[in-house]
Image 1 (cartoon, rainbow, N blue to C red):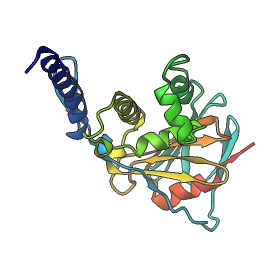
Image 2: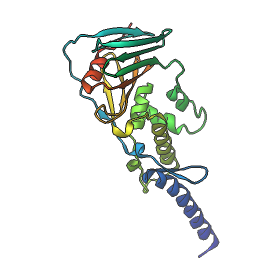
Image 3: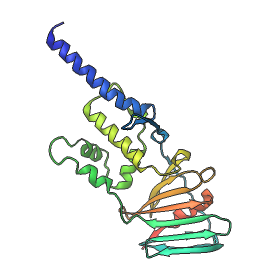
Length: 240
């Protein structure tokens, strides 16, 4: 075997080992930290399911608002409420259920970050986003949440594919909220889009990350509310 062929095979081996280890960490649901301690990440294997939110008949309710949105809560038995300027509301009810709502006024614009990573040369992520017609942060997160380690193919270890898969799996891991292990749903209604993390039947709390007017983002944290009441709140959200 000549020297050139030996050198070429050595480079291929190094490439395969490096990217193989990186990708295998995701395939096995583990991420290697600086101290080489494996951390299980079931989050990466979960795919979002579209919610089937149907119209719900009116119930006795509270109406509230903050920072550009109005919403209804299908409960009237409040024992305590709290307000912080126009960015935070909390409601506590007699049955120990509660709802907290706040506007994400200091948010991270992941779409802007990813589309400005490389202004010159090969814009791998930007090209991928344009090919998938990603124009909002909701679209971006939905694309990321749909990624799983199963999408990685050892038959395609190109630099481009590795960058794309690694980037979106990391974004998925970064943006997944508490309760995602119990369920991940998304919804796209006329006035609001968003994600639901958790399952009210088993999770301590359910978190909604919602998008209104494409750019405004809010978080709702709910404890002790049924899925029907959560759907009621989602349907009632209006911008003003």
